[in-house]
Length: 480
Image 1 (cartoon, one colour):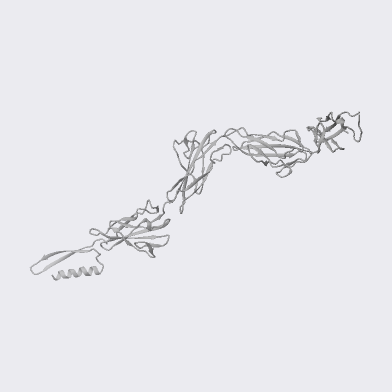
Image 2 (image 1 turned 60 degrees about the vertical axis):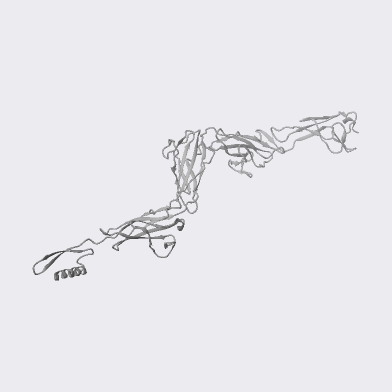
């Protein structure tokens, strides 16, 4: 028994000296002689214990959750690595709102320092965390600790996540092409638009689908032809303003439809209105005509001051712009919109397209003018009118009375007619259109009405003829 005591003391001393590690144990064998008992010991040392493994299975790292996807609890697993007989005795979890820097206290995010709340379960564990306690768009981090029956503690990797309630879907708009428009040589080949996300969200991506509605085929995103048999969305470049280069070649005479989808960082998807357009490469230009002034005409007091005309585009196209160029061919200056002051040909926009007119244009008497109109359709084809020339002259005609002769007295020699001549002074192409004569009986103060002197105010009676004219009446000889 003495040796046994020595052996036990030896175990204590060896452990104290650090010669055996935690978990070491002694195995003894005993033999007995007639005079004494001898006990021999064998020392066995096991490896040091290791810390438990603890893993967070939900939430997942770097994910965004919302009211629909958030389960309401943090979950995970734990296992002991300390060898046979060791078990997980408890798991606790620390959760930080990294946006505010506050920690979960077990009921709210109010602690200023790290706090580990006890979870339910061991090898499979969970900690309740209601979505109502999370703040939309805030970021969070989670770390868990597991303790085994030997007092060893293991720590998980940190998991970060974001919580954001779902908002209204993004709005997305196609700005080009324009709905119900026909394009031709002016087609840019690029589809553009804009998108905006809901409150506290951002646009993550935009995609666009383009259909040749004539063939019912979709663009696949590559190549120069429409080959996809079903709707295919192709990623666009950019987000809030976005664009998509359409490498597919459009076919003249075909119709197309474009639709865009925008996705925000919460997974909400917004869809644009469908934009329909046509493609038509026209070779024939629009027709444009000047209706006023009339070619090779002289105007004077009858000048309206306004140029007018019409324009027409071909099938599938529309007139987008009409303009006018006016030259004072006497001075060689062009109308700039306010005066004849431009030294080179100048185009001035008009009002209207299919039927158009100008603002008032001031002309100079005795000068000649030339005008030409130009119309452009929405396919960038341009048509030009015939050249119209005209003269503006405000000089009044000359009119003379040849009979009766001034300051002459007539009697039986009276011819019963008043005669005279008239001529235009407004230039080539103008003529006298009418002559009228007013006759007063200065004795009575009455004017000739065509049959008698009965009118109390001056009245003109139309004569016969123009350059040579005559006014006659049976009553004229009876003038007293």
